[in-house]
Image (cartoon, rainbow, N blue to C red; front, side, top):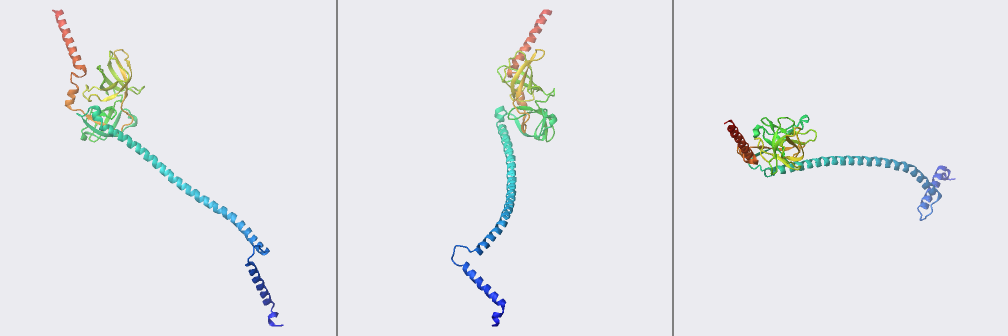
Length: 316
């Protein structure tokens, strides 16, 4: 026997190689059916892949869901910030619109109130104390700006008060709603019949201004407009104060008191106008012939002289 065939290892290796080559050739042949070894290998690999692919898909889906949730949270935060910015911008827009309306009203103020012959100074409300909310406010104009005590203060809607205290660069306004007994404004009704009286603070029960000392013979009507008379020597004439909503006799039945709804909003004050009254306009406003006061005064003097003459005749 030759040495080659006597080596069993070489023979086994050669047989294995022949079988392997045969299997490779068989597997590469053009056929549709799988052999049982191929089926076994394919099924085994499929089972292994199925065992690992399920958990891997679950893990991948979990991390993907976490990532999506994080992205969704970030997008939600961005949308919330945009929404907050939008709300802030909307508030600012509304505030600017309101202030623009006030400024437009201030532009037409002189024509509406016939203030062409008066000096009107605009001012910004800078201070308002909660415990004196209905009594006074502070503005950013003072003596250096020509502001003086007792000047009338108005808004585009109507009269709100007068200058009470003045410093160099700021002032304090006493509002019509102040309950101070010295807070009194000469007023009249915009009607054919002369109606004189005083605005004296606000009624705490109704919240309306009190129009007092009205002649008992005067016929009042709800809806009549109350304006400044200009007779007190402080305010110009015809500054709108409000409208009569109710009236009654005083407790003694000697005069009437009317309740006036203010034209101006005392709670929302941002911009105000201070009206300076000149000496010439003061003389014009308190002309004795104005509003029938001259005739009334002359009649009183005539009655007084007549009564004196009668007294003299009786004595003689």
